[in-house]
Length: 404
Image (cartoon, rainbow, N blue to C red; front, top):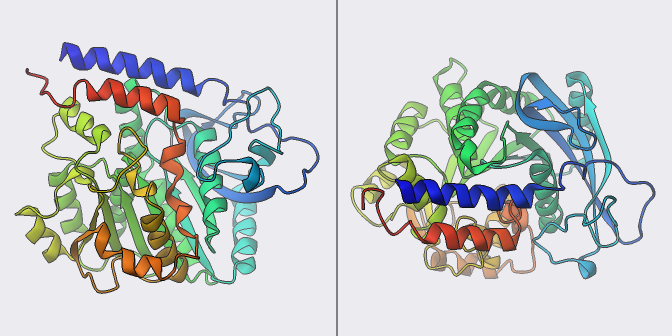
């Protein structure tokens, strides 16, 4: 355990260092720049309002639900690496080469509802995409990351960011976990409100890491209520879920058969989930299972869940925690399905485990459609240099049990 504690301190220092300088990025810049693109986000959050200029919301828990309307300017593709957030390097962003905030307004619930209705009416597909981030995430990280993948994907859906209180520190894992629990009722309320809008055709939910715990818990709560889960909530994508397998089995049992189509992205070499399992003494994390092994294989088939195994996919992510977003083919596949309204697990593979190879025929037939970058955000939460350092540190211990 001494080795694990030392690792956590090292990683905390790495992540704290990369978090510096992001507090003021939400200060709006003046003017417009040719060639840039604007992404407008509606934000629902359980975070506390911040008094710091350009931060908007802190990592502390708010007493009420808050809403924000934020516009993010994204530089031309010729001036950036697609799939990454180009963070401002100075005190003021340069929109020609960096992400910049165009407007950032905290709004009351009535105004948020009006803005949402208008956005849905402007969107021909009438679809909504809700993103629920993982732990260790600043408010600015969530906003810019979501804006990045909405832009890079071109996904025809109204983007709604649900962001919950995170102190953005590795050693605050327990605080973040309880903050996810703290936010269950709020996420349930947001999903119900979105589905209740008569102009909305369907709602898709994409969750990453600890955000999966929050999402599945919200669905479980909805399922046990008399009205159940709204039929408009059609697809739920669980990417690298940081959920104990035994707990997930119980959650799905309670949710029952009248649930959205659920697709789980797993990878057995996910170092972040392996570290989570060892540090927190879980039996196994859902995002790192081998879906071909019994009894899991049989359980998945009985439950009607689709699991896509990304273990054989090469990744530039040193932790392999955002691997599902590293393969252009898989990314396009998911994006095309979300954009078209087609069930992600459909197309002949059926329920149970599916390998990446089973998807490529479908994907390559739609190679010109680049809708799938909707799920590249987890890679942008920590910059590449910090992720590499973090991966090296975790790699020193994930191959050994704490007792060794």
